[in-house]
Structure formats: structure tokens, C-alpha cells
Amino acid sequence: MTAKQALHERIEHLSEDEAEELLARLDWESTETETLTEEELAEVLAGKREVAAGESVDGEEVFRRLNL
Image (tube, rainbow, N blue to C red; front, side):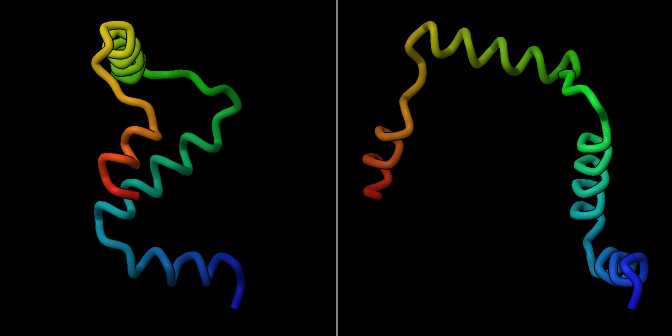
């Protein structure tokens, strides 16, 4: 089986949502630069504002709250 055949077989078993996610990942990974969309940049800036306002917890606290 060729690589293209194996890939085609795997794709046939994906849900539409899985295929959409995979396509987005392939598109993202095929770009030479890592630029954010305006929406992604807005999310990053919102996150930074939340951290600055003390509206976040660190990873260790998350694990403690989850009893992990």
C-alpha cells in the first residue's frame, strides 16, 4: 500500500469534524510563518488581561483542585 493509499483510507474513516480539524492543522503546518489571525490575537490579548487582573490560576493549582 502506498502512503497516499494509506492516507486516503484513514481519511475515509474520519468524521467531518475530524477531517476539518486535520485540514486546518495541515494548512497551519504548511505555512512558513506562524502568524495569528485577528481573532487569535484578540484571544491572546484577552488572556493576558485576565492574567494581569489575577483572574487565572497556575497549572499546579489546577492539578490540586482536580486532586491530581
